[in-house]
Each structure stands twice: as structure tokens, then as C-alpha cells.
Image (cartoon, rainbow, N blue to C red; front, side, top):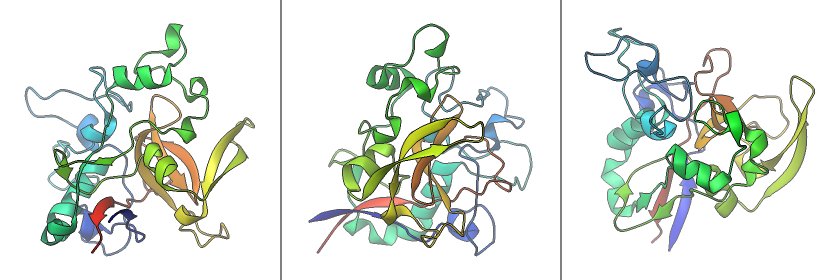
Length: 247
């Protein structure tokens, strides 16, 4: 038997290798690699989910910071923090962990899966979620367990949520500009206590509603946040998932 599990307690600074704090840590989706002084020959990465070469933001978030700071505030992006947790806290349990394929798309694969608007809305730094009807219901790019894959912890994707979480319901929200949009809510993924009194947001690995954002779950609501959102002003947590064997 197999199961997809998520760590209900968000990663702390110690668990994620980002600080010596034993409290839940918030980080930007991408590390300071994109904005800091890079080593000679290293490529500068943009402020977008997909980079100019089409590379996937979650995979790029595995890079440690090259900010030039000996103690950068955001040492790792999302994948880097999750990889640190796996390598330092879960290696001893690898016999029970399944190898997986994350199916993280490059931009061309992403476009083929979603058919974004044409014209100036179909490039890595211009696409918008309005072109993707029901993006929050995405079943593309879900994690699969595979003997040819990699044993690892990972951030969930929209595909994982929509293939594995049966308790979601569709809701309508109004954003800060007064525009309404549809999304989904899952009680299972609402770690706020259920009454909305606590703001609990954690990262997904999927692209978000537009070119500069990544997916999130906000008090159980499927949403998205800019990849370089200030983590102090808008705390976004890390909740790794695993495919495991059940005895």
C-alpha cells in the first residue's frame, strides 16, 4: 500500500537549514540567487516563475543563495529548503520512501498543457492566469511514484491536490482590486484552525496565476503569491510531502 502524506507542522528554520530558529520559517519561493552578486560565469535569473531559457521555477529554487553575503537572510529557495530537510531529517527512513517523478514542466510544456492567450500574453514573462480557465483545478504535472524516479520530499502541486484531495469545494473570492475569481477550498489543507483567525499560507511548487507567481494554499484556499514576495510581510510556510510505503 502507498500514501501521499504532507507534514502538517511547517518547517522550522533549523529543519530547513535557513536559520537557528525552532519556529516555523517563511521564505520567498526563490532564493537570493536571482538578485544577489553571482559568481563569475553564473547566469542571472529573472523575477519570474519560468526563466528566459524556459526553466522551471521550482527546480531553480533548489539553488543556494549566491548573494555574496556570508549569512544571507534567505539562504535557500523552496526546493533548496525541502532538500535540506530531506537530507538531514529523513534519510534514515528511505526504505519507506518511494521514488517519484515530479513532472515539473519547462515553459514550452506548460504552454502546451494550458494553451495561454496569444499575442503578448504567451511568453515566459507575460502570461496571465486569466488565460487558464480553472487553473486551480489543474491535474497536469501531478507527482507519480516511479522506480526510475528519485527518493525525495517535495512541495505539492495543483495536480497533486486535485488528484489526491477529495474534500475541495469551489468558492468565489474578491481580490484587492475588486475583481472576483473562482478557486477551491480544502478543509484538509486548512491549518489555520478553521476559523480564519490565523493566516496560514504554504507554498505549492506549481506556477501561480501569472508569470511572476507560484501556487500557494491560504487557509485551505488554493491561491498564489509572487515568487519574490517579502517573507516578513507575507509569511509563506514550507510543508514538504512524501510518497511512502505503508506496512
